[in-house]
Amino acid sequence: MSNNINLLELVSACIDLAEQSGDIIRDVFKSGSLGVQMKAEDDPMTKADLLSQQHIIGGLNNVFKDLIIVGEESCEIPPSTTIPNIHKLDTQKDNLPQQFQSLDPKDLIIFIDPLDATREFTLGRVHCVMTLIGISFKGKPIAGVIYQPFVDKEGHESTREESDKWTGRTVWAIVGMPVESVQDKRAPEDKDKVIIVTTASHYTQKIEESIKKINPDKVIKTGGAGYKTLMVIENRADVYVFPSVGSKLWDICAPHAILLAVGGTLTDPFGKDILYSTDPSLIENKNGIVITTGNHKKYIDLLNK
Ligand SMILES: Nc1ncnc2c1ncn2[C@@H]1O[C@H](COP(=O)(O)OS(=O)(=O)O)[C@@H](OP(=O)(O)O)[C@H]1O
Ligand SMILES: [Mg+2]
Ligand SMILES: [Mg+2]
Ligand SMILES: [Mg+2]
Image (cartoon, rainbow, N blue to C red; front, side):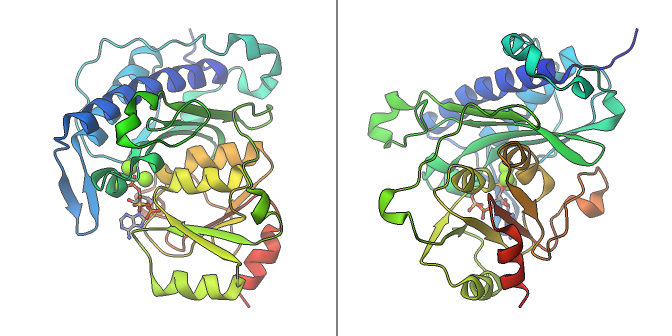
């Protein structure tokens, strides 16, 4: 009996677990006791990060054998009774590319960022918080699940006073299948502008220099790798520029797969593809990342002029 995996069933389970983790993250935030620990000087982790990762990995291990999973947080995974739903996407079965119907788990790596934008989470700027679950196949992203707990189903942000609107939003994609959960959110007044989005809390001189080379009309600084990638995917920005060390493969695998599914591009600032691997020396995106949904080469050339 093979342990081969149907990608639609794996993505269904990831969606189910990410949505359940959203409840965990919202509960921790509303409790007011986040249990913040500093992993490094500028790298917080909270109780929500840990519980979210334990929930997701515990649930995946109950259904799929031999999965290779890389999660951001170093933590034990207690026994879990969660059995995620593998049938949420059964209606999409006819759209699943044939090569994804029976995947050998040894060719897959699941990258989990249980809570992206932790620093923003600790500061109460929760709209950019996301759970990211990315699936790579032989080194390339093939599927991604993003769950945004502190927005409504359309992704509209609301204040803590309106927290009843925090119904949460799921964005998922499999490369080669149509993406249903994203929209064009360009503001009419920004139609002809070049907009860059970049980090709010890990800003560097290098980022400053790169932005000057592109000479945009507008720069948006906000938290979360997933959130910024979604801004590019939904056309609220043209380029996500982060040409510094700091982001890791779990920050980008899920957003990268969704970006590919809508025809976008993610490379390092020299235009080089990212290899998704369990090799500890490759986990950090040492040169940084550049993300677009068009004119990628133009921006890479500007950054390297
Ligand atoms: N310099 C440095 N040190 C440690 N970690 C870093 C760094 N730069 C980026 N990152 C990680 O990349 C994720 C996105 O960071 P951003 O700055 O874009 O967003 S945020 O302001 O941290 O929310 C964010 O992931 P999460 O840890 O999941 O929030 C950061 O941890
Ligand atoms: Mg992250
Ligand atoms: Mg994280
Ligand atoms: Mg972190």
